[in-house]
Amino acid sequence: MAQVRRVRRIIRKIDPWTVLKVSFALYAVMGLALVLGGVIFWSFVTAAGYPTFIEDTLSSIGLRDITAGPLVPSSDYMFRLAAFLGVAFTVLMTGITTLGAVMYNLISDVVGGLEVVVLEESFNAPVTAQNRPVRQVQSWQTAPPTSDMAVVAPSEAPQKSPAPTGR
Figure (cartoon, rainbow, N blue to C red):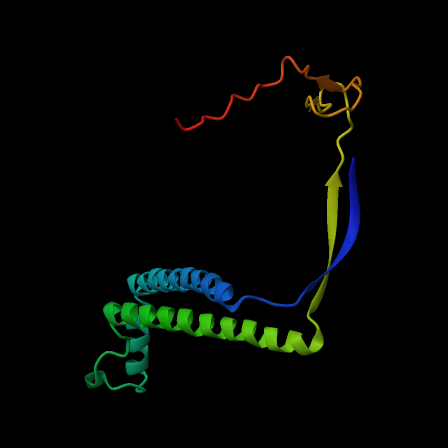
C-alpha cells in the first residue's frame, strides 16, 4: 500500500559549475545533431537539383547575371559553416545557461528561492512470516527472547582471542 504526502521544497541555490558541465554536454549533443541534420538536408537538396533550378530560374527571368558565378555555395563551404555555427551555438548557449544559474543564485538571495511542491510515496510492505526480520541478540543484551528474535547463547558467541604481548 502506497502512502502519498505533499512536501514543500525550496530551491535556493544552483551550482554554476554543475550547470556549466551539464549544459555543455546538452548543447554539444544538440549542436552535433543540428550539424548532421543540416548536412543531410543539404545533401538531399543538392541531390534533388534545387540550387541549380533556382539559379536557372533567376537567370531566365533576368534577375541574375550568369557571369557573376554560382549563387549557391559548395557543399564543403556549407559543411564548414554548419560546423562553425554548431560550435558557436554550443559555446554561446552554455555561457547563457551558466549566466542564468548565477543570476538565479543572486536573485534567490533576495527573494528566497523557488518553491516546489512534490509528492512523496512511501511503500509500506505488510509484514508476513516470510519477510519478518530476524534480530540476533548479543550475549551482553538482556532483552527477553520473543518469537521474532533468534537468541545467541553465550557459549555460541564468538570468543575473543587474547591480545599478543609482543614478546
